[in-house]
Length: 242
Image (cartoon, rainbow, N blue to C red; front, side, top):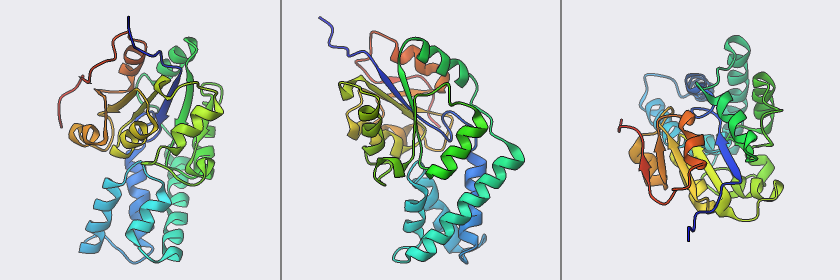
């Protein structure tokens, strides 16, 4: 008798997974730390950007708290600049969904699977992103760290918040997909049976596996065939290392 639990909820990351805005996010981080006196060409800037890369997927305010430890006012000021810079970039350039993502959303919704978008953006920025994408009729829930009591990835809170809000009976009925180690850690800690890392974002296959990825996919376009499969028992690597 198969012990495979059918997936009832898919939790999807935004930047690097469903939308291709990595460059805009990186520039917004750079502009934000520059306003606090950490400018390109300095060792402090290089260290800060390494921290940004390692912390991708985490709440943005937590990233800035790591760059400016013990200085909450500075972290908050940098975070405000980040939000203004990123939203300004959205106005100028718009957002481009990853190839195939709209078909993925439609296919999963068509099978009755609930869809939750999970992000490290603030609620204000998330609302702006969703308004620009026009996805309100394609997803069931959109969650920022504030919606889950303030704790974002790598903690499991946002995934578990989706489980509770959408009435999922068993955490094993959850699939999580993202492009960062913190995405993988959050899914693993929440008890999701599928924690899929995609190679379209910021972290390498090794980082994703270290975070607890059960599967590695080339892109989100491969996600429906994975979570609708009857054979989910082993880690599958569907892409080359980078």
